[in-house]
Structures are given as structure tokens and as C-alpha cells.
Image (cartoon, rainbow, N blue to C red; front, side, top):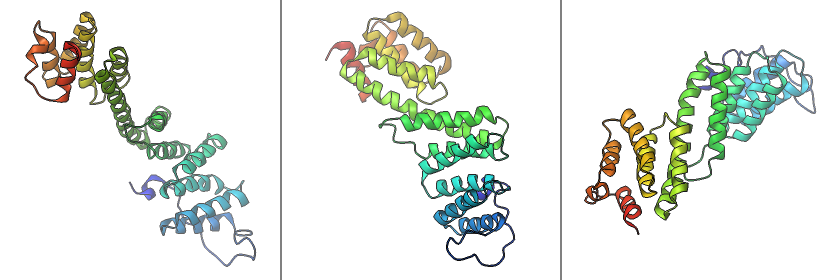
Length: 270
């Protein structure tokens, strides 16, 4: 998405004039002109210089009409330059100092984007992903009727999928090691907290397998019922249904894949 489209009215260029005094080149330059210089630098791809000039607007003209927009655009310049932690900090500063500012919705959205950009591989610690998901949720809840909220919803679903994927990875690990209670806990998190993600059918099928291995047939049947109600024609439900039959594990013995080998090991003893 082009930054110019994300920041309406923030980059209206001011009229330009003569040179700056010696020493600090920004001292004595009107806020409007400094902002215009920063905007030009940003348009030309000089993000670090743009951020410096936007910061000069804040520093030298804190009570001008340009200070607020400069704060937001300084945050954007950091984001565009890949300095996401700085972008988050700058956006949070704007929100804290100007909770009623005209660009507050964009500041919240920019903060969420910067958090989202820091999402890590689903096999690693997911603290950054969880924070990104919450930041995107904040945008959706605070500004529900905006384009920011619509985009945040899409990204939040992707963040949730990441988090669900991490839970599944850990759950599978516990399952392979025979730590059935811990595995069930991870799969339940996916079913209960990330219901809109593609990970749910597998999580439900895994719960059927784990509960059967633990001797909790009632719980296994409930998980299978949820799976059948929501994904009636899926391969996951077909497998779960077979497992619930009297000869369930044996019925799956001829099927290949680590999922089935795991189930066999758990149900037959490794």
C-alpha cells in the first residue's frame, strides 16, 4: 500500500522560501517550510533525513499546527525505513500527547503496522505476534468504521493464524513425546481462541486422538461432534470418525503420514 494513500492531508506541501541561518539549519525556519522539506525528503526516499526534519518541526515549533502531523509523519518515516521499534514508540507518543488529534486513528493504525512487521516465524517465541494481534484489535475496536479497521481485520486474522500455528507446533511436539495433557491444552487454545483460523480442523482431530489415548472417550466424542458440525465433509472429520469406531486405530494402520504414525504410537504404545 502506498504511503501517500495512507496519510491523507499529512503531506500537503507548504510554500518554500529562502535559506536557513548558520549553525542548526532548522533554527529560524518556519514550521510550514520545515514540514515541506521533510515531506520532499520522504517522497524522494530519504527516510532518515525526513524523520530528522519532522522531529525538528516538533522540537522547534511544538505549539504550531504542523507539530501534530510532523509527529505522525516522523513515525511513518521510521516505519518506512524498517525501524519498527522507533515507529511504535513515536506513534504511541502521539497517541499519549494528542488523544483527540485529527490523525489519532492513523497513529493507532501505524503502530499496529509496525508491530505486525515484527512478527516472527511460528516456530519461535510469539510475544511479538501476540502484541501485533492486540494492536490490530485495538484499531478495529477504536475505529470500527474506517478503512484502517478493515485492513487491520485482515492482518489480525493472519496474526492469529501465526499464533495458532505456534500452538499446533508445540502441541504436536508434546504429542510425539507422549505428554498428552500438555498437547491437549495447546490444541484447546487453538479451538477456543483462534476459531477463525485454518488450524482448527486439525486441532479438533488431534483432540480426538489425544482424548482417546487418555481414556477420555466422552471428551473425544465432543471434539469429534464439533469437528463434524463445522467441517462435515473434511478429511479431518473422516479420520476422527474412524478413530471413534471400535477398530479405529487399526482402521488407520494402512494410511501413511506422520500424523497417523503418531496416533498409532500413542494408542498402541511406543
